[in-house]
Picture 1 (cartoon, rainbow, N blue to C red):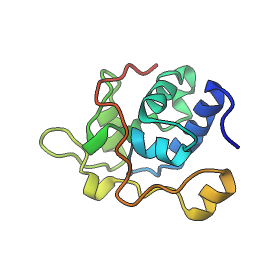
Picture 2 (spheres, rainbow, N blue to C red):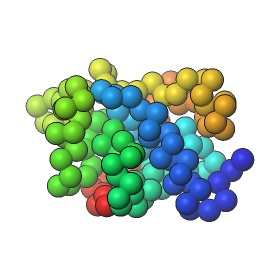
Picture 3 (tube, helix red, strand yellow):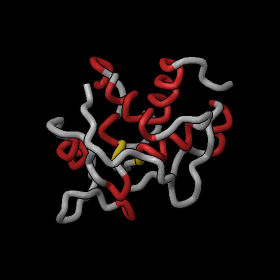
Picture 4 (cartoon, rainbow, N blue to C red):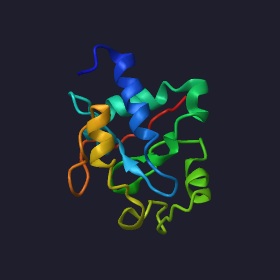
Length: 133
């Protein structure tokens, strides 16, 4: 069933983000592709920016810009990811070839009304820095 309003989109986004395991990351576009129903990377960014106190319940730090770029500022995202075992290159980008999440299982996606992540991930995500919380 497609989302009926912004909050419904946001809750679906949070559900997907919480599927990303420790030590793995996804891009904004990956999350949007899994949510489907017209979701895009900017909506994912807005949803994560609207977390407020729920930021302790949703693994927002595991969502990055394309190519592993950290797109938040001042929130210790790099430290949080490093503590989970995520690896970075000399530029501070996540090593996507090692840490990129392949997406949810087909069983989970079907059972929860989501899409599978296309092979190689999605490409629809913002490049600009986001202000979360």
